[in-house]
Length: 68
Image (cartoon, rainbow, N blue to C red; front, side):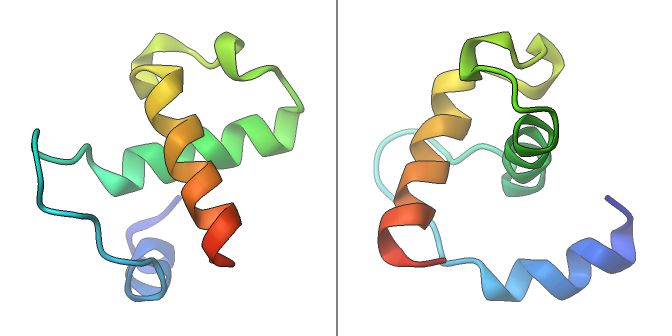
């Protein structure tokens, strides 16, 4: 995703809660989710360079439930 694309998308995403650990980079999480959606691969097969698959899955489910 280019910087210009991210600049358009970022304001549309809901804010993350400020509890517990600092949140992961939302751009990285979005790239991971987008890659998984394009390839149709299982969540567990997401490359490690994107971070833990559980983080992206949790964020994806939150966005899915709240209609983002």
